[in-house]
Length: 231
Image 1 (cartoon, rainbow, N blue to C red):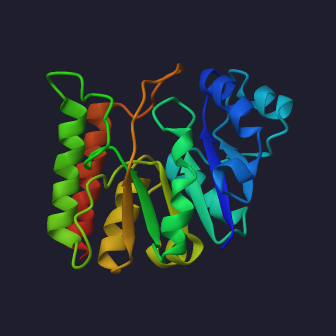
Image 2: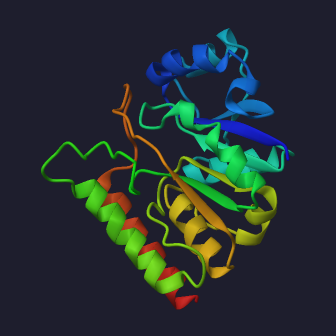
């Protein structure tokens, strides 16, 4: 099985300054066959950093995280893609954990911030609004759509791997941050094999998060309803 690591960026120069020196150590360190980036049109020096570290990148003409997923599959031929955001939240040392689960037959592998042994960035806070919202959406997805396999604890996290065969089967339509939630829901619907492993979510290194909690939550609710009525 061939696997590519896809670095998803939009004005993430702060994070790239930290991660690109690590990625320059080579694919073998992370258990992948190729590394490339998909960029949403950065203007903060991200593209210059890609050039400095000789990391191939593709510029999105159509904006949106879901569009970045689609473009990554269109412009690659590996058997599976791992999606990684260099904003500090995702643990780059966990990239190597995907291959083993994919080799065991998983169609979709998610790095979970919610399962036993994991750590969510809000776990040290008294009020964990974002975590609780994610768990609520996860509960809904499992209750409405899961027909086999274990309970999936983190249906929304973007740090995930998808096989090419599964991607073609999922036939996703989301163009924005709903792409992860929709791909998990449709994997449930199509009875694909989903696997998780625990990860530790770090604090953001810099830049700005474009997934604002309330607007994104409303989009998730709309998507959930659409998937329910389309069931």
